[in-house]
Image (tube, rainbow, N blue to C red; front, side, top):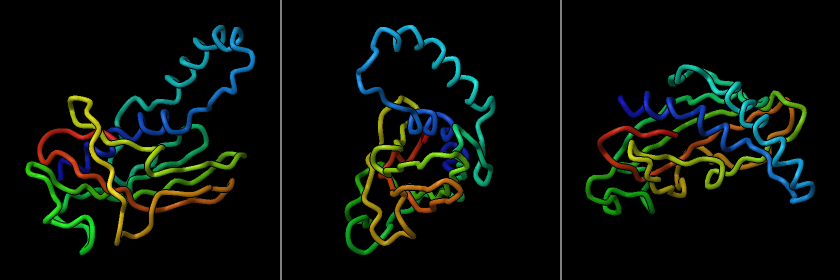
Length: 162
């Protein structure tokens, strides 16, 4: 149960990192001058309190909701099994929905857009979500949404942040 609160708590940091833009290298001098403005903008979009499961946070036009988060000993019968679970670890299954309320298409990758970290800041192991209810991968057109699941092999005890 504690994992649900902790996973939702890290949602804001995830989306700020996952929805950032990249530079093509042109105009490096102006990019350096604009950097403080971009940092201030990111701080403004960061929620002051950490959201819980079922709450929606909007960051840069992406309305993100963690529908559920649970820890299990087995996700499927092929890959993410109890026999493959490392000592001191559990599988964490996060079900989420991202609605695109912006005017631009969003590109979501379960492996690139998200990461789960323990309280010491160590990344937890992403696992391909075999046998789950959809994967969090794809393009989200303006006005559309994407729902799916993320699976990690994570520390059984302690805090986790998405």
